[in-house]
Image 1: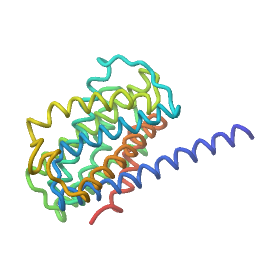
Image 2 (image 1 turned 30 degrees about the vertical axis):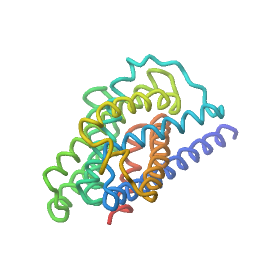
Image 3 (image 1 turned 90 degrees about the vertical axis):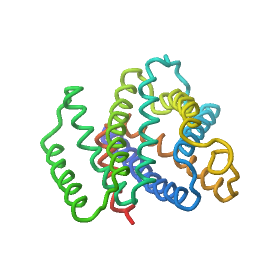
Length: 266
């Protein structure tokens, strides 16, 4: 009886985590699109804000004894931190250059790519039921793209890069948590500042820093508040993604995302 109660409780926690991630993921898509359209805030700079706020949020959690940091060698997190940068930058560029419908449609291809990576690179096998789900996903993306969604070339490139890097990132998150024996907060606590440092170096080469259109430009109070809110929600998204992958799998995370695709289309 006690085992059954524990199992039900565990499934309830996972369901709550999936629902929370779904809600904040939909929220940040609309919020970021609003920031791009109405304020023109630069993409990489917004991503940098997300990373910094994520790290500050984890620092506060650590000080409140919500989790205990674990010493990790930076060299073993380098690729993960780099893929984190690419994952957020390319998906944000896809959102910036595509409609929300196109952006969400492209994300649907992340599930097949994750399964392909885990099958060919990690020799992981999937049940027939999971493999069969790839057929309607892939056909749906192709048919909708042909009959409904108009891709611009640049947006299509960013969407494809976003799918590839996102898939690699999510596979590596699960692998690193298992390899280093850390939980979601412990891993993100070290990876977020590394990703922030990488973007801090890269931003001046691609976007203005000061003046009109720069991260330290003359932004209105409403723009700054929206950017800060976006950073807080990004912290929730990042943390919940790590938690879901650590407690389930990258495929579960992406199947959850697919459930939210139609709900966030315009």
